[in-house]
Length: 395
Image 1: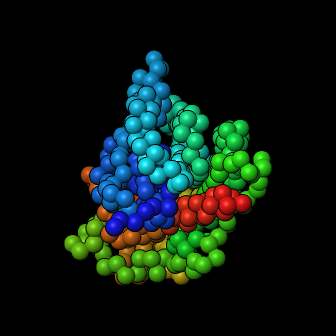
Image 2 (image 1 turned 90 degrees about the vertical axis):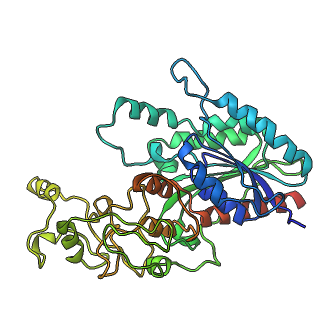
Image 3 (image 1 turned 45 degrees about the vertical axis):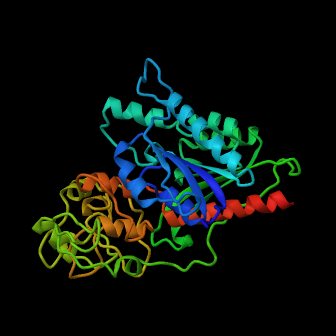
């Protein structure tokens, strides 16, 4: 007999499935994932078979959450409504005692504090439109009344220039009779080998016996988790040379490096900044952009073209983690003079080694990995939210 799930779920803006994987690992049954990026479909479906009920993968709805309009004819919100009205009621009727969770982890690029310069008008318009992705889900919450809502985004969405979007979303949930809390947390405090600051929001539907603002606090750490280091996360993987691909481990592939950039990595100890590259054993290896800044009395970023420390969690894994020119993404081992591989980036995001990413070329896969919610974080928050809902239900 197949096991019964602890909760039902729908994953909005699911991407390649980090949140979905975490919810399944937490004992949930994910009904559907929604993301307009069709290239995520294969990765999402092949890695996220539910472990309860029918043991089928969630539906992947490759749909755009915005309403269609003259200004934005690509919107497909009416189709999202059709699909969710088809799917959710049948599960609610079959399992009336199970809570429903909406995971709403909108793409974070629009809320990051780093603004890309020289964006095209089209990209700028897209970023501006995406800032309303959270609010696009409010009518769905109002109609389907999930017992739980969970949201994750960059830390700066809570305190940065667009903090009103986050606060208005929370206020709207409270208006819809949810109690909510939101916190800034670091992924490394949950057993994830990465320093990744994020904002987390959990909202629980108010019940007849619960008072308004019957408060709760999202944990800022998993007290049962041990700190995980870079070496613990990726040290078991086969060594690679620049540009090499492993034949044994899926997605264990790294970019090639010029001789100059190999020298830059060899000139630095793990964790060391790049400011002394001008005085390396190989001669002056300093960056042209740093020279220009120094001529103006300024300093550039000290972590590009540098190596991770093996004994600490990694820096934040971005969508460009496979390139040493985009941060401290050099492998720590002296015999591996290269950027970390796609598989290593996934491991630092807490994906298991058998979670295989599908795509054409390295950049699309790196984008899937860097944009993902770490599955271990999603698992912890899902388990905690369901337990808190159960406690309130009994209260």
